[in-house]
Image (cartoon, rainbow, N blue to C red; front, side, top):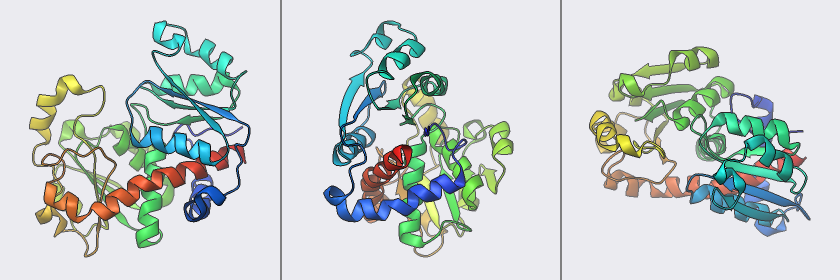
Length: 297
């Protein structure tokens, strides 16, 4: 049985299999095969979502299945039922689970106990679906990501930065993370991943000659109490026109959204690169359909 729990645990061959099937899903939409026909997939979301929820609900529907949305207040998890008990109940009633939550351990336990495919739709540790989409978008626009340079600017210790580390290690591109020291990923994660990973506080050095400039919000969900400190600490770690001039001509500017213009990216640079950013957002649908197809294939 297949799961998508993290990029750390996903083999390169499986990533490439997902990427290979995306163009057909993107080109055809409702003319695709319907591998989820007759199935119901639970969507357990403890965190707010726009792109992840909409893309999975639409994707499950377009693949012939029925999405069943469950937030924390809809089920007994919200009143303290252990995750393993919820997993064993759902495993007898639905055909797969998409979960967006805080703890990576909860996702791992759900997969171990449910007996059905489980997709990590975001935890505090990783956001594998987003980074698979991001890599696919880079390859769609620039060709193979192997050998390219991606500069991640901002909070490099967040789930996005960590997921990019695993992608770089497995897919053979250089990742440069520019962040203040306290917002850099742990040395243990970098060492475990291997690959060509650069950590620096110098965002100009990270951007120099890069094929992709990438950023995310400075205040991730669950970090709201730290907002003022984070904004102060990360001020200056912004993608803007002057930083973009250091990148390779034709470099992509990417953001996983939502964007807080004037903070991690300025308004003019966001709008100048909105075509790429919203292609990236749309690709969440197509890549997640490919992921679901791979899971049940």
